[in-house]
Length: 212
Length: 218
Image 1 (cartoon, each protein chain N blue to C red):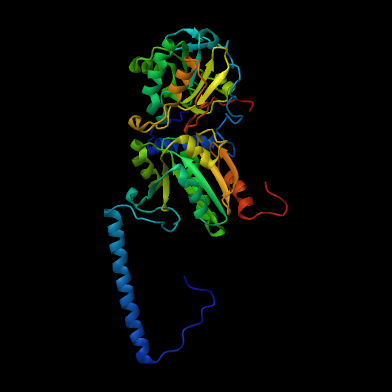
Image 2 (cartoon, each protein chain N blue to C red):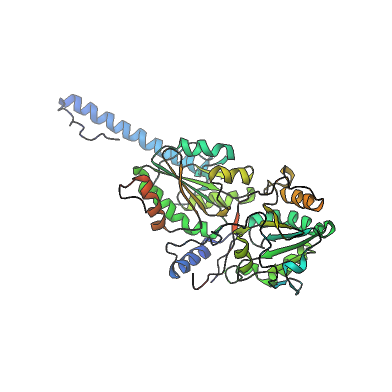
């Protein structure tokens, strides 16, 4: 990150400038080597822990080993929603076999990218059963989701009550929380990008004219 | 036009997505059980509505009612959760008659949207799984709408007076039958059959949204 208003570098003496160039060349070479190693490791080894930066879509071969999916139990939901930070948190419960989920998914990913800087965090929770988790990973990779996502474990009743007791359990289920972890909106069924945007915007930037 | 719920090849999905966009996937949701399920104590909805079973019979909920009550399970052939619980649903359903409880499984998915839930596929499934109770089609989704059912599988248990006494899930672990701690539906049937109060009258489960036939007017 380059802070804005960074002062220009002071003029350097010739010898110092040469040394600086040499140092920069060395740093560049090392950085390039590191990048090659990282890419190679990423393709050959397991999933990375922690979150990865959002990137604007995937390019190159699909690599589902880069997808990070962690189990989440009902009693972790509240802390998960609170711990994320930001101004709004959208929890999307989906499954690889759920056609409406797959239909709306690209829009949710796009939303996550578009409003990340305004404080939106998107948490995907897969409802896939164990046998379907490989398909879920593949789908996440295809959709370019490079941040940590989750899959549901434990009793459904407790899980659903933790997100929103009124939820019938039909998926996709979307749950929108404000910065205090308070549920502001939830709905069942697929939504297009504009629909998500309409619901998320009032929570991201409360308007004096009211929401909707 | 088909929208399949099982694993879909990417090309097929892309085609389905394209079709969906063409037919106006714009701002509306697919969930239609928005009113929510009927409340405990509610009389059996659409008790005299005729449905066709995999055995080719016409049945009604009133006609299937046992002395102790009626178990209605909305399920289907294609949903991973319905399939995950299928053997357990069949086991409970096949024993229900012995407990004085009439049993019916209802498939409310629109077969035009989900070919795997067409009557012929239901008949194959009933044979494969040894289903001894009624497995009926509700292709227009009328019965599911009247119940406020939203997903599969979803169970509704009515007592001898036709009042709802249990609504919800099959048990607490669809993924691993050996890890089940709470056999919700089996308990509910046992409680009803033995005249006891329901130990847990409402439970919840995630499932596949019922693929309702789209109504032209809505």
